[in-house]
Image (cartoon, rainbow, N blue to C red; front, side, top):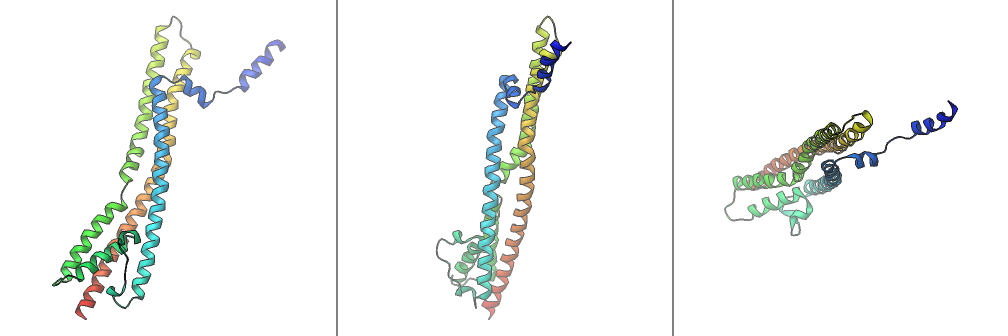
Length: 225
């Protein structure tokens, strides 16, 4: 009994690794796992880049709004060209002052210009969100496809053998389940990041619309004065 105890203890301490599961996967499963790794890197790049971009735009908007409150009039604020590099609020202000400088322009023309500017800037705020949403919804389906395909191959291979056992079936099934794990590791962080960025984007779009409304009111008062 003691002669077999030592090898048994060694076998019990050995546990399969992720690399072993990947090796046991079929060709389709390996391709799906590699694709999910690429999608994960892309998702993290988009989320971090989008967060930093929104944070930068928020800082530029806050800075311009502070200058606008201190200015005696709208025309007193000079924004170097191109105004877009100074943030969304600066773009709206540039559109409004450009219309005001036109002969015969009234408050209706200013409001129309601001509405067009808000629509264009909203598209900028929401950029790359569709791509992130595609990863959130597509990754679980890719994992499910890899798992079903891998399990199908595992049972098909066992069916061609004269004798079937758990030892012959387990590697293929574990390799197939790896695709589901990989898909969840991609989808879970992406869905949290997507919801956070989507909420932040909606808030900034609302703030943009409110700024355009306040800007139109101030221009109207200055034109009447």
